[in-house]
Each structure stands twice: as structure tokens, then as C-alpha cells.
Amino acid sequence: MDERALVLVVTVAFLSLYVIGIGGTTATAIRIREAWRRRKPEGISWEPRPGRELSLGAPSLPLAVRRLRVAGWIAFPIALVLALFANPAFPMLVPLTVVVMVALNAFYFTAMQNMGEPLTLTEDGFRTGPRGRERSVRWIHTTELMGARAGAFKGTRMSEKGEWQDPKLVPNAIYYRLNHALVHAPKTLRQRWGGLGYYDGVIHNAFGVPTDQLLTAMREWRRLAIEAEGPPFRRPRPGERLEKRSDTPARSETL
Image (tube, rainbow, N blue to C red; front, side, top):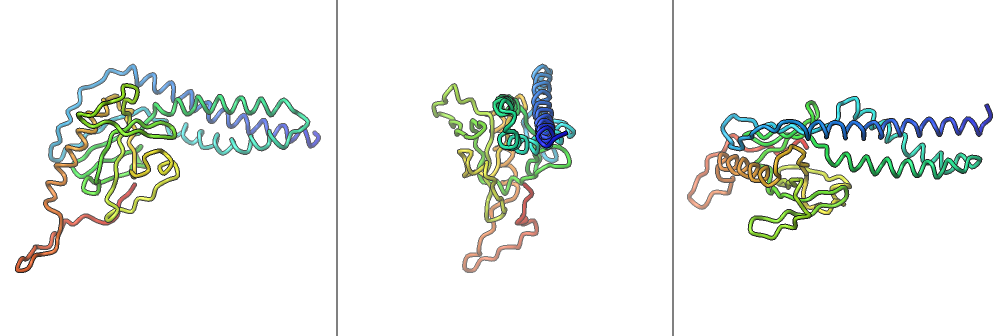
């Protein structure tokens, strides 16, 4: 086998790995979302009670598919570079690779917009993410919760009660901001360029419930948690003594 044929085989191998990884992920996401859409919805009680946890499921990818997706994205730039620059003897390989990648990426990002992560509301805070990779946020560290319409590369704030709501911008996510005096919350490039970089995290609503109901419930759980903590610590006034609180929140948070 000569050198040109060997390079072509390697290019096709990486391109095939990309198609299997990203195409398989796209097909799985569509199938999971369709099964999720056909499920029978259950009634949800949003009322917060002491010791209660409210868990909301969401369509998400299995672990094996997530690993296959990683392999596909690793193969993506390698296959693209090889197809563009390493195979001048096969000119039809370049347009074929570009067409396949553009079409597959479009289907992938469209399908992944319908996927989400489980959410659990607790008396102390909320948890997001699959089991074993959950991220926890405490209510007392959350300074703001806001509904928004989130797309792949931008976000638009949801109208509050009494404001006009664009019917084309149905809210599909909840953004939250943390108290940076208590929590170190570094932001990714996607968060900074997503149109709502002021916020520290986002919860995509793929739970099959209206976003405004979820937002109202989270605000109520947060309000009760803050009230249970009592007034914030402050310096004593002249002639006044404040007892030291033993349950002062920690200055770290897992995100």
C-alpha cells in the first residue's frame, strides 16, 4: 500500500469514527426524546416541606453514548484536517467531508437542545446532573433566579409578571447567579458568550413542566431556606451583643 492510499484509509477511519460517534449520539438523543415525549405525565406537588426532596427527571444520554460522543468529537478535527490538506490526490474527499460534517453537526445541535439533566430540589438547595456527577448549589448562596429563552449561542430574558411576553420566546431555561463573596464560580467561554454572561449557571428545562411554574417553585424554596437561616450576620451596634452563629454557611460550593 503506497503512502497516498494509507493516508486515505486513515482519513476515512477518523471520518467514520466521527460519523459513528456524533451520528449515533444524535440518533439516540432523538429516540430518547421521542420516548420521553410519549410518557404519561405525573402530577407534581411543588409545595416545599421540611425534609422533602423533589426530583425531576429529564431525557439524558446513557454513559456509553456519552463516551462515544467524546470519541466522535476527538475524531472531528483530525478527520477535517486530513480531508482538507492530506489528500490532494482525492479532490472529491473535501466537499464530501464538509457536507457530511455540516449536516451532521446541524442535526446534532438540534437534537441536543431537547436533552437535559435531572434536577432535585431539597430543603438546603438543588442538585443537577446525572448520578455520580451531580453539582450542588445551596439556596443561601443563590442571589437571583431568572427564566429565559436559551438557544445554542444566545439567551433572552423571560418577561416577569405584568410584562409583555413575546409568544415566540417561550422560556426554556432558568439562570441563577451566586453570591461571589461566598462562592467561587468560574465561568466557561460558552457562559460568557451565551448572551447572559452575568449569571453563573443555567438549568435547561427538559422536565416536561412549564418553566414559569418551575421558576416560581424554586423561588419559593429559596425564600423559605433563607428565612430559616435567619437574618444575615452583621456587626453589633454600640451596646449590643450578637451571639455567634454555629451554622454559618461555608465559603465553598461545588458547581
